[in-house]
Length: 202
Length: 202
Image (cartoon, rainbow over all chains, first blue to last red; front, side, top):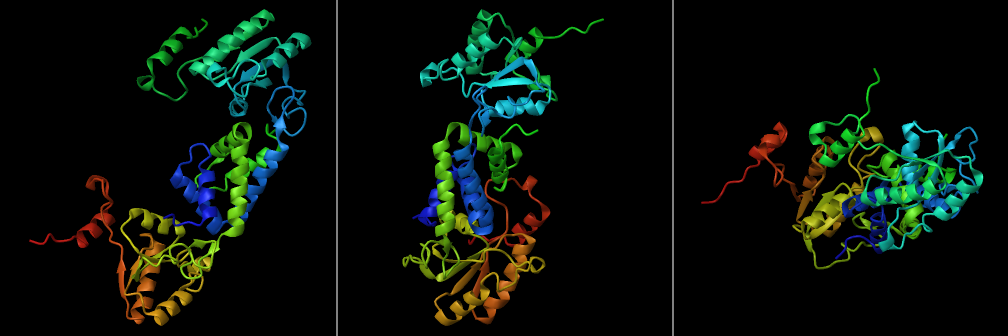
């Protein structure tokens, strides 16, 4: 017997859709909003509905946007010679928070994965390549797909495509994350860090 | 400059209302639903609205319910001589999942906290005491408020109230949680475990 009424059970199940949320946390969230903060619950339900309704994708870079062009593509102060290709809007957000990049982006909304039916078309590459070929503003394309097998495969695929357009193509460095200890690094990462080591100019 | 459209920013802020969710997780949740699972997002928004609308409290025990009486109070197979008093519906859920209890409950929906304006009236004690006095079904009241300062204070207050009705009152044992090591126990817990030790009958 479930001790909660049907609508509460359904709510707990729905909270479990969220990434990283198991049954315990989902129950906690549901009871927290219902029991103590119904007004906050109402706000959450409303903002979720509103966002789902209003938010679409930027026609240029496929980042989330309520208008045709997203805030980044509408920002003319950025360096138009740089284009950074990321897998998701979360990755874009991480890059922006690093503060080290001031160019434009392109969001693949995924990675190459033939087994899931995700090919170049699904990643918007046709649009991107024709943009790059016609506008000729971008000098360097930075491949910032994840350092996973799928991300690397996607990057290698992109290198070939970009090279045919005669563009400079780069990839984020692999190496030891700041603040971490060599002792705990895996072999692959250390090998990459060695291979990609930089030399102090004398 | 925020890189997300206004409705996405609002959604991220709303997710931060949830217990244990900081800005990073909130962003992850928002982008996950918007970008990959809009249908699940819709379901979450709808179930939250529905639950907020439908769910009220059981007139008898103050547990969540869509009807006058909750599923537990409507279940006549339970032991009507036992009443367990808990602070919240989450605590009730934890007690039920333990499988060790088969009586009825009363949910205080809080704990005594004069500084926040929470007195006996807010905890529904007037209703509870008159129920207990008139029905005379309950033989033992188990106080299962938390082992925090507020929970203990609430339990001591309840002991006095229940004693005036001539009821047997008990409190959950304090001691070493199963699976944990003495080495890591705090002094208070160990003292309680010693005080409340049980003797093996020969």
